[in-house]
Amino acid sequence: MAVKKNKKSHKNLWEDHLTRRAKLEKYPARSVYKLEEIQQKFKVMKKNDQVLDLGCAPGSWLLYAARQVGSQGRVLGIDLKLVEIQLPDNVVAVKENILNPDNTSFLDKTSGFNVILSDMAPSTTGRKDVDALKSFELCHMALTVAKDLLVQNGNFVCKIFQGNDFNAFQKSVKSKFKECKTFKPDSCRKQSKEIYIIAKGKK
Image (cartoon, rainbow, N blue to C red; front, side, top):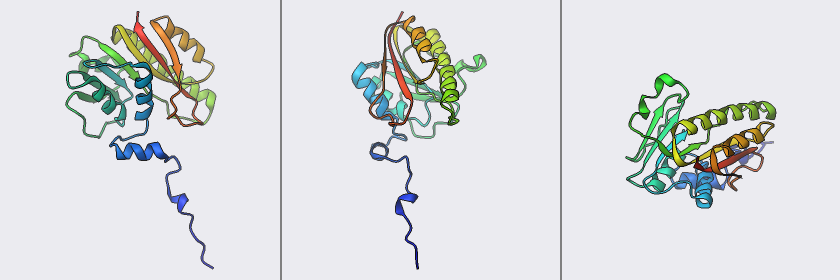
């Protein structure tokens, strides 16, 4: 007797309506809708801004940010992975480690950023405590970059996994910005522990 194959088993288990929407709208990943929700609610970017996107691969946030800042704005993305999609004229993606002080020549053309975005996430281990700690370390690095490269009154968006260090990180952000709020976009997967810190007005 022939056994019918389950068609669902051949589908990407992570695919959902946002994944399909991203494909239709020519974004490489569904994560773009998290930034869209953040922008609609908090207005972190405006026309002519200079934006730095930490952990920019595969490039969805770059494309969205480019549209928000317009042709006179500029978006710089940095990632350890290569961004392979075609980018608009006002976007540059660099395959570098921004934490390496010997590799920062790509920052020479900027006098500072109006917005720094960090969607960086560690390679997950499946252990929530370990993953949260790794996330905290990345967030701390992103905050250091924001402290050094954001202009006064600049804005900072940072993803963090909720864990024991969350409150300490949030307190650290609050000490450096006039406003600090947490936000979990509806487009985050329900089982995800990620949350975004939205900080506006660098002191």
